[in-house]
Image (cartoon, rainbow, N blue to C red):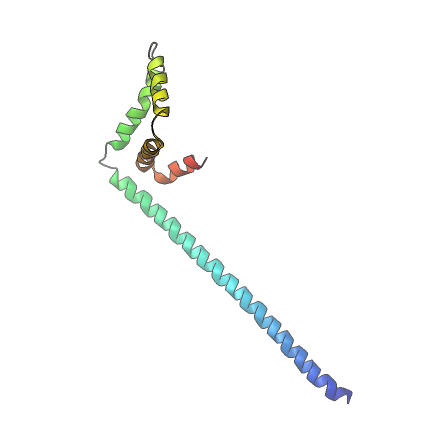
Length: 126
């Protein structure tokens, strides 16, 4: 009698245990698929960033905008060391503070596009 009672209970416990193992296995496989897909996305993003850098470098081969911006940004630096020009630099920066926010952002975008968007956005985040 005891054997007839234990057999179905053992089968029921075995079926429950198999279900638990199958559920854990499915959850683990789902996690692995998620991790692999995230890795693939990151690889594609990295490749896209590299492609963007290469395209940007090729596009600026014959461009003078980087040199122009470098000279433009160097003017206050040079004037700051010339006696009598310090006031001009100070007044210039005071005037820039009065500019509308949209203009300041526009200048920032121009500089970021010229010198590298990714490096500039890292700087802006700081």
